[in-house]
Amino acid sequence: MNKQNKSEFEQFLRQPDNQINLAEGALMVARMEYPDLNIEACLQEIHQLADEIRETLSENPNAGETLTQLNKMLFHKKGFDGNSEHYYDPRNNFLNDVLKRKLGVPVSLSILYIELGKELDLPLTGVSFPGHFLVKLEIDDGAIVLDPYFGGISLSEDDLEDRLQEFYGDKLKKSHFHGLLETCSNKNIITRILRNLRNLYMDGEKFEKALQMADYMVDLDDDKADALKARASIYDKLECSVPAVKDYQRYLKINTHGKDVPFIRERIINLSEQSRLMC
Image (cartoon, rainbow, N blue to C red):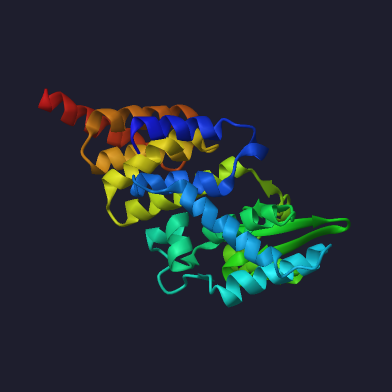
């Protein structure tokens, strides 16, 4: 992302959260990979898809009818699906690729789902459920929880508990149920895409691409310590000793009692010595 695009992105995320268009934000992230991406054309494609769904609705549809038609159009007629076969393909996180390939991961499919819902007067919001991003619709006596990765299916309380059990295993505690379905801010949803990409690139040893995502994470992620540690690790892999040391030191100021503190201190010593010898 060039300086102008980066400035636009940062300004975009400084808006009041309810004014952040998720699709636009996701496409701005995609522009890091595709500098010539036509964001307006992609947004228009989403508008057209919403229009197609609207044409299937009655004059005054209720939420149930709208959800049914949204699911039918998106997952059955258009064929959007979760990419379980190649889940860790970075393209699953770029909304333009999701629109083109009709494959995505929970968060990217949820962004498309939420934005279509918004155009259809359906106030859907994101949920950072452990291990798997979900969508909810607030109703008078609670919430309908939906999973766009699996065709927009509705999840019962038992379903959610089963997923928690699967995620935490024997470590599942009552505290894990607290705030389980809290609404995720739009800014944090965009940050989640950046985190996905940063981690995928790190795992794939594409450290320069990972660094691009990590730079944004340091300024955006609520978990500042994790963001700093990740960027320091990337600098370390790229043999950029000075910035690695700076980020490791900043990390230690925030996280003074973590299990990794001895290792981080040792890396600071070793990297500082390497920098001194190179001078």
